[in-house]
Image 1: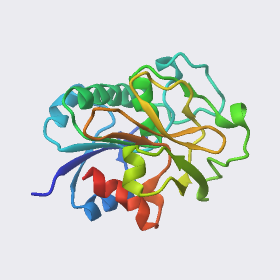
Image 2 (image 1 turned 180 degrees about the horizontal axis):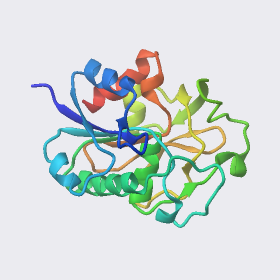
Image 3 (image 1 turned 135 degrees about the vertical axis):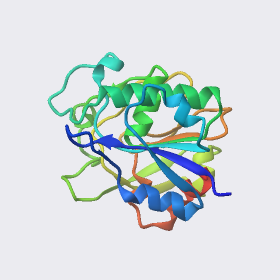
Image 4 (image 1 turned 180 degrees about the vertical axis):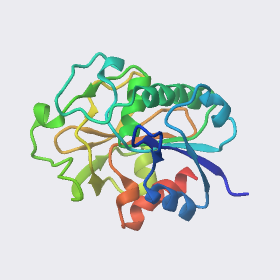
Length: 224
């Protein structure tokens, strides 16, 4: 039987519509899984998580700085505190019940915040723009990441350096104590994390679902 994979969605308007790029679904289907879409807010997320075999945190807007002691910033956008709290609860569930969890872009950030880490509110303020983590809408930004030897992430991709599609302006500042950094970009930004001793708990700062490179599909294949 094909495993059932839950993917988080985002609210797109005041009428209560939710959205998700079809690319996530395509990658999961290609890897052999079936997909169920999860609402960005739920009073009892555990009831939904009990029914799935794996969970993917999709990308989206910024995380409320109130949740990690950050400062308001004019570049913050798309904040949804209900989604933040729902996904934080899901992180804790995934750890307690060993539910496989893959966090993408915003996903790695909420994983870090849920476990006590903090975020850089706007990357260019801290490290400049020598590495372009985000270009204007509809333009793909590719940059290199370096994978740590002996990490699960490096084993999945079978290499220690690769170019990845990137679209973000925030990133991990202080790494949560339970997490291990397993990839970074040339400017020192953390690009991937793992939770040791968990069957599959990986967050990546890039967007593997946006790539046409078969290499990026391997992350979904291993997850499924």
